[in-house]
Length: 126
Image (tube, rainbow, N blue to C red; front, top):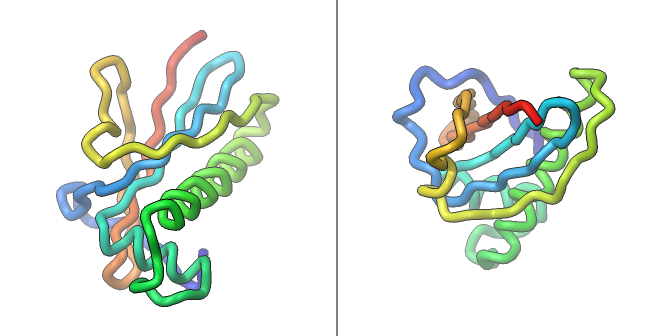
C-alpha cells in the first residue's frame, strides 16, 4: 500500500490512535472495519497517497485519505469473505472514539518503518 510494506505489529500499546475511520459492512451479520493511526502515521499516509509534503496537509485531506484507505480495506475484506454485503460510508472520529461501550473490537496492529496502523473489526448479529 502506497509503496510500503506493512507487517504485523508486536504490540497494540505502540499505537495511540489520533484519527479513526469506521466503515460498516451490512448484511446477515454486521461487520465494522476501522483504520486508525497516530498523528505522524496519518500524516505520512496522507502525504504518500496525495504525493505532497506533510507540511502541505490539512485535517480534511488526512481524513479523506483515511476514509479512502478504509474503503479499500473493507472492499478487500468483503471480497475475501465472498459476502453479499453492502459497504457503508466511512466516518472519521477522534482517536478516543474507536472503542464504544457496545462494540467489541478485534485489533490488528501493522507497522511500516515509523508508521503504526491499526486495523480493527467488530462483528454483530442483525
